[in-house]
Image (cartoon, rainbow, N blue to C red; front, side, top):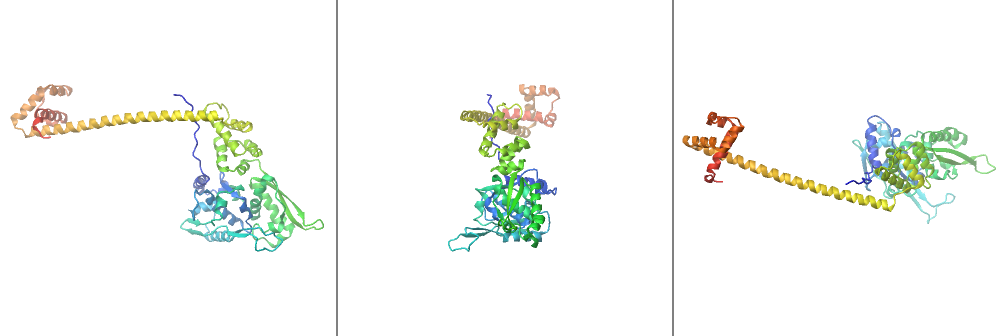
Length: 466
């Protein structure tokens, strides 16, 4: 019966599987993660932007570890992966294990601190103060790395609420510690377009140790801030500028900074704005091949085009594709479904369910027919095999009886067989004359000896014990 093929749900490729596949493809070629043609990252909790006093390499080390934690299907006590994979995730190209251990040591020394004590007074007994090591035990042995993370941090890594998309492809491309530190800090503020005012002395603690001249704003601006801003604008998915102010109207000392932010009009910008980024982006890019212009339109309308609306447009477009109602561009149809908020009706869902059931029932009936036919064929083949074995055994017993008989009896058996209907039929089929068929000819011809054995067995079967 004719029926439309229902929409099939494809098995999802997880970010973990995709990252491993990219590593396997790229590592042997010596290609770094920042050159990947697919996005790799995870939803990072805004909580972790409070990390300060950490260098660039240690941040990459922590990113790789947290990516692995975020993608693990279950919470486990220790995480164990191939060292080359871990190094690839953090874009560590060196074979210098001593240096890598130093980076791990710096990451272990870093802590995250939460307190409600205002900065302008000393702590009191009722104040909250919590400090947690960002990564615990780290072990490297025989090409593998093991590590653990404090149990209180796991929920914030695996199931973040207030979060932002962190792209390892972008974050590993930074070469300046301050650029990476600023990028981390401003990501949660991108949707609002600006950060709050930040004390410069506080910002100077973000990347770890800085030179003595960093305390003087003109040198800090020339040697650290401006190069960092340029790098962020060149390699990341955001456009960034800043403005400063003095500590008071009567002072000339610049002591505060505020960053102004915006997403670039690229697919990376959409990637960063999607809460289920890796999966939805993969569908939009690989299945529907959306253009940069179409991605930009989605990015500009994210306030109303949320994940549910995008997924319902994908579902509707797939449904129409399977019914043969999309004649030109699937990507264009998808965008129209997004703009006009098209969705599958309950009646259409019911229709798909009914069609699916009909197809399933029909497939089951066909499978039952095939199984029944196969059973009959096996049964017939089994009976044929039993008959063949039985007849071979009868012929063998007939030949044994023939061989044991005296000359007169053997000649009588041969004469009787050659003049019987069965014998004449065999000789005719083999184009032999009875007069030319002797005992030697019979036993040198397997077919003749087999039929003679059958004939003899038929004559004396009542006398042969079974």
